[in-house]
Image (cartoon, rainbow, N blue to C red; front, side):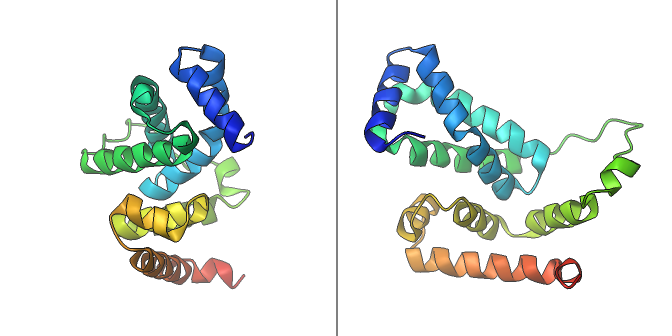
Length: 176
């Protein structure tokens, strides 16, 4: 997106009700937010839901944002809370008769993607959250630790343990 001063003016315009400003904020943060949500949930479909809910909540609460320049980290905070809430909700069963295995999906690394999804989903939430924030790379260790309620050092340890576990689970794919 634009420099920090520009971001602040776009956020201020969105707060004042500008649909164009809100659209620009969503477009600028959407891909990163979905990646973060996927890392937080370990499920691509749930990640899309979490991202959508995050944007809806941000839209409703934008007047509560104290510093327009902090929009990104404020949005990530909403995403982390939304993902935590959604993980506690019981999952809906898959519709009957839906077979996710098709020749097209088997091609182009679908097996690896599923293995990566399983590896992320198997992580304890505190490790998954830390890894997702580290993969995003927009926050410092101190900021990410504060967001997760731990020290910067504890955040770095969680990231290390999460990466080690994902590497272990994907070892068969990484050797190829």
